[in-house]
Length: 177
Image (cartoon, rainbow, N blue to C red; front, side, top):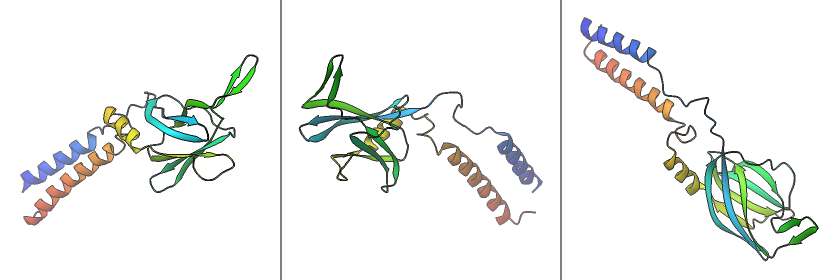
């Protein structure tokens, strides 16, 4: 019994002093979600979306369009003003284009699931985009990113605790002491 008790003590000490894997704090991991769209006539159509490393612009001002970033259960994660992408400014004036490809660049949120794009004065979306594929692809290509491996340290702790519970339950079933 002393051997098993000593083994348990050694394992506890090893677990107590073992470093847990954590993300490097010095690495900048700011990300943005880019959604490429096309504005033609009075409608907007979706082209593609992706996640990149970098920062989204500040969308603090109200715009012609409102971008609403939603989570899985429809929880609003953010609302952003987007200027009219059809307006092009030149040195001597501006013009309104009939058709234009444009991108909406939003701050990354690992809970993001959908983007709804509205005209400011209306509440019916002009386009609604599922973002889960873009986030899944990003994490598949960047598995060490802290937002993609957010549960890794918890899983390690849970595994160590499960191991000790297994040892202790085995020890107690033999009448330990």
